[in-house]
Length: 109
Image (cartoon, rainbow, N blue to C red; front, side, top):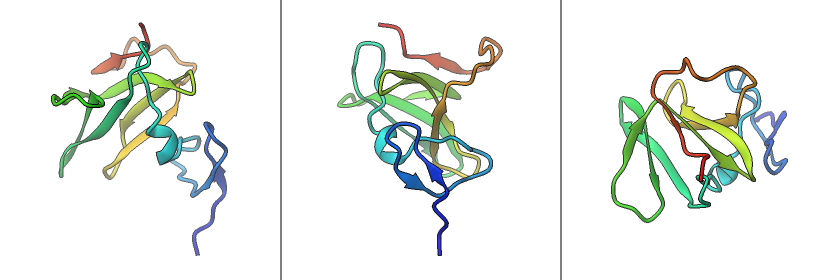
């Protein structure tokens, strides 16, 4: 039995809690990620061994990143690689982000 003791901060859907990502968005909300121009974004692992790549939906080229700042429901979101593979989106932390290596900020129009 899977314990659904977490709610997506975007839509409120019940989902499994992960202590490492205590306030993560659901997969459906991650699919609503947009840049500052309103263009839909896609995220994936770069390979079986991990890494994060992103692209604007409908475009062919993937771009490498460590972390991506974008928007979900007009809220700033930090997207990054999950520890054991996959992609996770979380509300942007209140901490300064200038020190994060490999950060791509797609929020600006």
